[in-house]
Image 1: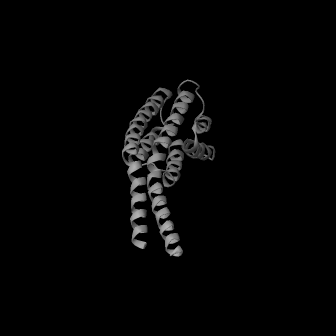
Image 2: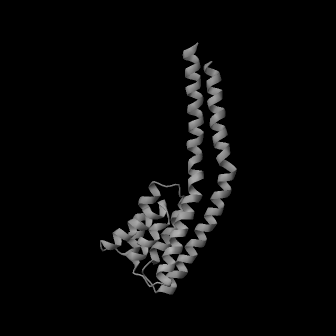
Image 3: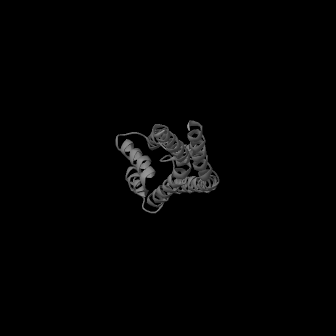
Length: 170
């Protein structure tokens, strides 16, 4: 009987853990978008007002937080290796996308920016950075609404499935 109770407890905990794991991307995505948008704001300031060279501006944008540091820091390193800024940002974005909670629409917004980064004058780049930031802000608002609607559902569903499986074991 004790072994059955331990097994049921383990199954319940596993169900709860699965629910929490499913809710994690919903919780991380708004934070990641916020960090990337903050990095874009820093990048825009460095380019438009500081007239900072792009690799240095990307390094400063990397100070915005964890996902921004990975994206802009990697892009800066690739630029310093002689890669074009558009190629560098696109490659860094591909690396970030594989390990993040970003959606295809989020990636597309950043990819559109990557195509024009470093290819025009400061004013045009600032305009594209502002546009990308607005897209990320809209995506963040949508992600936050989605998180509020679905995060709790996933956690509760994991708990309920774990409880149901535990009851069936007993």
